[in-house]
Length: 208
Ligand code: 5GP
Image: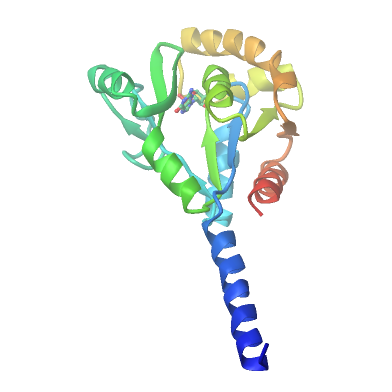
C-alpha cells in the first residue's frame, strides 16, 4: 500500500475511533440516600464545580422552598400535571415522598446519555430501585451521614419543615439507611467538598 493511502486509512481509522468515543453513550449515575443527608448540597457543589456533568431536573408537586426557582432545583407542577406525565410514560421513575410526588423526566436523561454526557440523578430510594430495574447498567451511589444522630440534627436544623414533616422524614430515613447495601458505592458526607469530589471521581470513572 502506498504511504499516502496507508496514511489516509490510518487517519480514517483514528477519526472513526474518535467518533465512536464521542458518540458512545455515557453511563448514568444515581445518587440516593436519606433525606437530610445533604444530597442537594453535594449535588449543588458538583454542578458549580463540574458543569460538564448534567444533573437531571425532577418534577415535583411540593411547593418551592424559599430560594428555589422553577426549572433550577425542580419543575414545580400540579398533582394533575404530575399524574398526566406519569400516565403518559414520560417519567423514568417516580415516587411519593412525605406527602408529595417526585419524578424524573425520561426524555432529557436519555438524550444526554445518548450524546455521551455524564448524567446524574438525585432521587430517593424507591425511585433508585425503579431505575435499577429499567437501567441496570447505571451506577448507584448511596450518600450516608456520618451517623444517624447527625442526620436527625441536620433534618431538624434545616428550618424549612414543620415538626410533623421532620418526623415523617426521619422515619423514612431509617428505612433508607437500611438499604445502603443495595448500592454499588457508599460515600460518607462528613464534608461537602470531599463528598462532592468523591462523587465526581465515581461519575467520571464510569463515563470515561
Ligand atoms: P426535597 O423535598 O427535600 O427536595 O426532596 C425529598 C426527597 O425526594 C429527596 O430524598 C430527594 O432526593 C427525592 N427526590 C427528588 N427528586 C426526585 C425524583 O425525581 N424522583 C424520586 N424518586 N425522588 C426524588
